[in-house]
Length: 518
Image 1 (cartoon, helix red, strand yellow):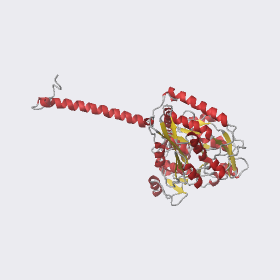
Image 2 (cartoon, rainbow, N blue to C red):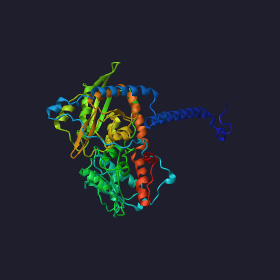
Image 3 (cartoon, one colour):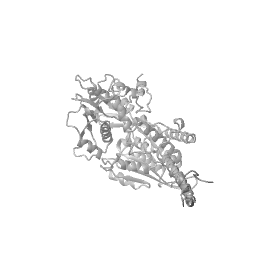
Image 4 (tube, rainbow, N blue to C red):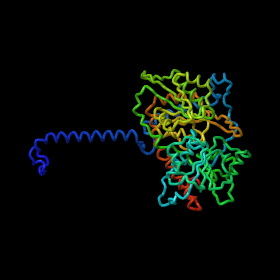
């Protein structure tokens, strides 16, 4: 067989002798291309998030899903009439078990939970202005290692990326900011802001602002009528007699519910502004290559104690894995670990630290004021399951960030997390009982997950690694589609910020919100 018979190159002296080498080169090149394609497909499958058919769990996973929730239901019913569990170490230090909740929780009219807070925007309805003409002051704990700090920082970053000149009003004058925030501070305009956006508790929001004013706040317990906080909310929501508009935002429908006792028509007067996560930091981590690993790590991330209920996850872990190991039916031993990453400020007592740190499998990472989000993401990538039995959350930012990395999460079926968690994307345990929460003048209910209910659930996650990872992967797919800061801030700008400056009398309402108002 003659190759390239019409090629003038092959008619030159000496080139005919090189045909065998050319054929070898061609075969080697083809093989290299095939290998490269296989590597690219493998890499893409590991790092991308595949959408499951019809948006539901794979068929094989449904068996595990049903068995898991039957287990949860049985354990919850068994311990519902028991008092809250309290280990001896706490009784020895004079700490009592939580008391039952006596405060009726407010309710709102039943609304459909929107799975798409950042719905694709209709290009024909986009608000367009010259954003460089409108300065926005972001006022809050920018750069600080708290949930409010994370939220305030991301609001500033993404409004800047949208083209608005940003003025930073940090609460700590010498706060160490990220390079991008430092860059914003270095070029902030020397002018009066057209809009002030404050992220804080209600008692520090301006009732009579001197600019257009947005306030973002949150609550974990009901705001009751005839209280100081109730008066502050209603004073803020009073129509302004000046030409300046003001709006109040909360991150979840749960927070709206908590305000309904103090704020008439809370659903209409208080706007929703969900929180998001940084998709460049909290990336999806492929974990299906760990199925045969002899190591399994649970992780909990937050400020120690109090409303975060750190004690419950530690006690549940000790029930489930008293020796820090689990032996499978085939005789394989899995080393199980619980990593507790303490948020700032440090609130752990020394005796608590010494007691729990001595337990097999428990690792406590000390609080650090300068721990970057990249380090939290690394902790998530190393872990296999996130456990967070918080009594009550206005939103639950750490849960969202953990879901983004593909971690299956175990959380209460209660409070703000229900806006982005459901039983297909999270392991949701109904409250074993409702306990009383007391925050000074505010009282409310918290969801107590009994450690004796959580323990068998944690065992199931270890024994059914593949099935639990499917839940985590589906969670990541969901939140990466709708809950990134970039998507949420674009939607927020189109619904609230741009129309304000464009002088539009009626703000454009997203289809999901419009449907809920009918």
